[in-house]
Length: 302
Image (cartoon, rainbow, N blue to C red):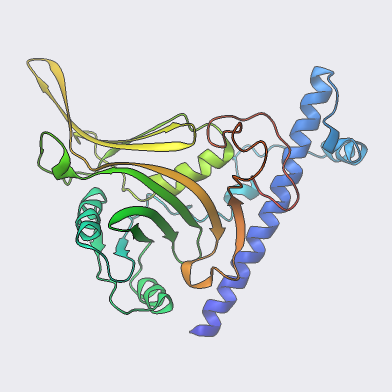
C-alpha cells in the first residue's frame, strides 16, 4: 500500500512538472505572437529566446477537441461527477468560540463532517481521510479565541491553499438570525481576473456540489484588493419582489500561499505561489484582479 502511494505520488509530480514547463513555454509563445501581430516591441524577458520561440510557432496546431496538456493532469478533472466529501477540524485545544465557528462552517458545506482534533497527528488524519475517500480537508486555526487562519487541502495529492481570516462575524452576532438552509448553494465569484485568481476560484468552488436550479441559497466570494469577502444569503420572492436575507457567517479571506502537496508532506512539497509582502512593489500589485501581462520567473508559476 505504501509503495503504491509513493509510486502514484511520483507519477503525479512528474506530470505536474511537465505541465508547468509546457505552460511557461506556451505563455511566452502567446506573448511573442501578440507582439508580432501588433508590431510592438518584444518583452525584455523574451528577446534572447525570440528567434527560438518564433521557430516553434510554426508547429503550433490547435486541437479541435480542446484537449491540451493543461487539462490532462488536473486535480479537479473529476469534479462534478460526485459530490465532494469534506472533513473539517481545528487546531489542538480549540477555544469555545473556535468550536462555534467550525460548527457554523460545517453547515456551509453540504456533505461535510466535523471532527474533534484531539491528539491525532497530521499523517494519521491524512491516511484516514484518503482511506475514506475524503476529497478536501479543512483546518481552522485561531489566535486568542479569534479564527485567523484557514487551510484547505485537496486530496489525495494536493494542492494545499493557506488563507488568512479576518472580520469574522458569527451567525448569532448578526442582527436578524435566519435559519440555516442546507440546500446546495449557487456560487458568485466577483473580480477574479488573473490566472492565480482562477486557481483560487477552482480551489474554493470545488468545495461545493453542483446545485439545483430551484435552490434559494447563494454564497458570494467578492474580491476587493486581494481580500475575498464571503457572504451567505437566502432569497425569496414576496409579492413579486426579491427579498434577500443574510444567513451568515461572514468573513474575509486573503490568500498567502499555495503548495503542491498535502499537509503531511509540506516540507517536501513545491511552492506553487507565495505572497511576498516585503517587496517594494507589494503594496501596489494586485494578484487576483489585475493582469498586466507580466512574464513569470522560471522559479515561480504565477
